[in-house]
Image 1 (cartoon, rainbow, N blue to C red):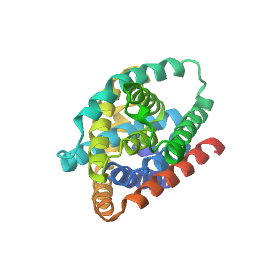
Image 2 (image 1 turned 135 degrees about the vertical axis):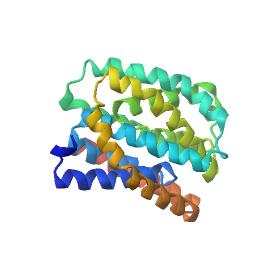
Image 3 (image 1 turned 90 degrees about the vertical axis):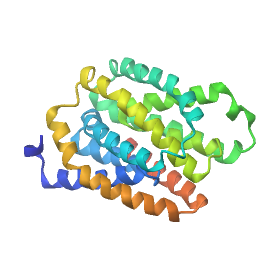
Image 4 (image 1 turned 120 degrees about the vertical axis):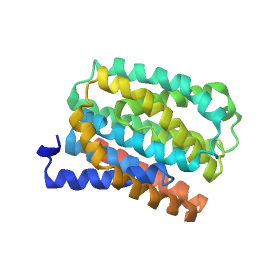
Length: 248
């Protein structure tokens, strides 16, 4: 795979690696910019196999830094239905042609976006956000979207913001959840969808220094970014990503 990449593809994957590193260490939403650009460069479904190992590397970096601030109870509530979401995505994949894969990703993110704004304007005092089924629903949606196209960042952003996590707890919990989810996804991507190969893994390995650079930048930014600006940034990047997925 490495030998066949064009200069444009190298530039895109390098920029995406920086964004992945930044996103995992706190600049939430940057992964949403990665998905459409990687899909346009490598193919919507094929790009998920290139992105996933990079996400795993960035997750390991993130949990190494934020390991003491994770809310383990939140992670435990989300994981069971997230795994169920994997298999829902696999079942749906059998009925969706490759050409429509990107549209599915876009509409899935559009649904998550609507929930985000609903929570912003109407969900501030809703006790139902503390119910077990609320966590189960977001775990299922998170598992589905991450399996479809590594696109669960806005889903988890909506959920964790609705739980009123402080900034550091938010980032640490998010990092641990995605490390576990992404490691669980690897066998399915390799043996079921067969879109991870030795060639794609070699390409991912070349991106490790770039991911580390992005992670360092993300750590610095999250320390500086106020809570309100943090929320506005996530919402803005998510809107841009959804529009790109639907119109490209």
